[in-house]
Image (cartoon, rainbow, N blue to C red):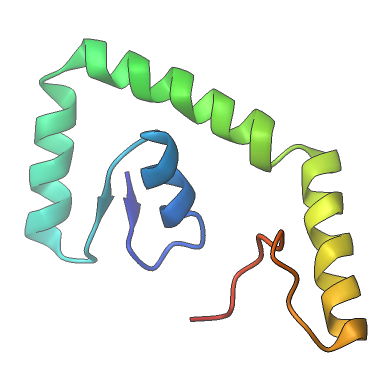
Length: 88
């Protein structure tokens, strides 16, 4: 369960690795209650979250993303394969 403002919300949604909710107490409580009522879905989300981490957040994956970001800064353009945030 992450908020919409979390830096990884897009990836959580893309992978189906959890729920993304507004930063509102009722939305958070509702999502938590819904998630806790479905243990099988929680296990599935956990498996998807592990895939997300393996794909996007290993040390080598983060290093590749950082290298692309630095290359983009040096070139003055954002490459098509860049996967770093625009800062919203």
